[in-house]
Length: 391
Image (tube, rainbow, N blue to C red; front, top):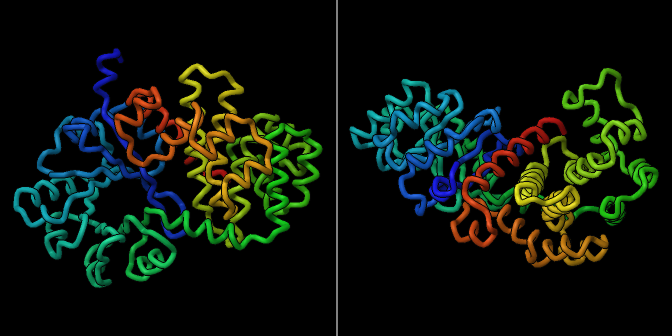
């Protein structure tokens, strides 16, 4: 794509939607108002090479301001079995919009109505409803008329999540996972926290494999996840790996460091569910590595970018101030500056990776074009999806 074409590439934000077990089930796209024609922007974004392969097997939720404006060009790039169209409830009662939704539903696309619309949602061919949990939630009977899955957006905390589940919602997005993780980290016992910080310190200074192995033996949960990982289909081992020495040999030093950084999040979950922080950390790490690579960074700088992305949620994981965490780890100054101040080149990349909806100003400040940003998002989400399925 030429420089002039790249400058016209649309902006986009992506947010994960999870089920009650914190497993990702879908991704929702956000096209900012400054992108102009949203349908044209979506056509460009979702027509990008290998988009749906990168995001498989997750569904994609595509917001439509008006279903009557859906173009043949947009539908030509959207596999019906992977797409949910999010339609404003106010339009469901309008005959033209209602018929447009029904045609999309007949073509195999799923319609999600945003907000309560009574019988009009069913007449539009809707399968599910979506509500903003930060505003007014519906009565339970409002959800019973459609099969779902019903989606609660902007779920703020564990109490709101519990209320939404009791009403019949089964898909969720919002900040609730971060609040739940903070509570779990705050209740972590002192011994476990010290051991985790010690392991982080070893990883940060590229410690000898034997030192890592000694500490791993003291942490049954982390040990279990590491052996589970190397025996997963992702590595295709013909013979089972049964000890840490073999695991380290199979992964190699560089990959061992990376997987252990992510496994730190997996080890915190003791109820059998998925830790909501794990895929978030994976997305940040992978996107920062990709942006660093595209910008010409060598392997060491890519490793530093990856580490900054993974470690950016440690304060949430541990329930500790980030300044205290980095002080105990002896990190590279560039990584420490990024984590505590969002300063320097790594800090700029991290601030960008944390955004759910990007702006032209944020991209310009980071020196990154919209197409490069979209490529980095696809790479990051692809990797995070695979990580979540293998851990």
